[in-house]
Length: 224
Image 1 (cartoon, rainbow, N blue to C red):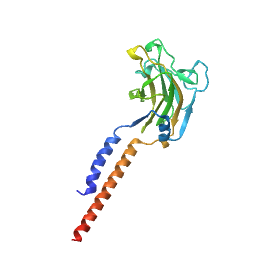
Image 2: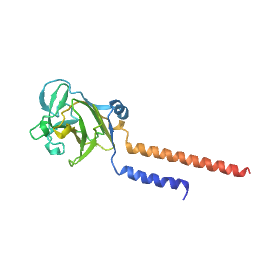
Image 3: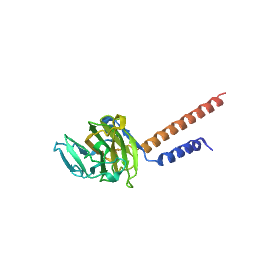
Image 4: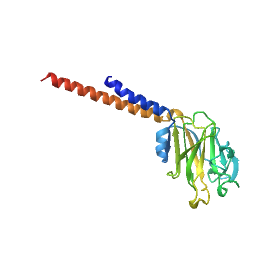
């Protein structure tokens, strides 16, 4: 087996492992997120303070917001939110923990590969990504403070911003979401592709070093 074949076998093994799972990258810094994803195709600033319950579909045709009384059960999510102070929040509910519910959204476009938003007043413990079968995949966002951005190599269907819980478990922390954006798919870096490119470059460099070492060794032997 030649040196190139020996290098390609571990690369193929890593390729299979990388392609077997979708990669989701969390950003907690807005500037870093915007630098990574590029062009914003949908931007909602939730301007105004109507202090009213509104349709979650009234802000953009690209997605619909709603309020969930149970963040672990997408079936409890409606299609209305409370709009006030330049942001949106939940509608509460008697079955929600201390009457504070979670804000959710469903994308109405097929290529939502990146989204980000600012939030104030409360904390968000995690973002529950919802697939078309209503299964949940929790992304821990407890380290975030005011901004959450997520980038994936497969399209998002929906999500629920899960409230942080006050110490002692006494109730959910209410937050307001603002400046929601979706980014163009052709501007999104694909984690799998980047990893493979880095791996290929590393292998190419290793091959060049080995070839160079063999050449110098042969030259040294012929000069003796």
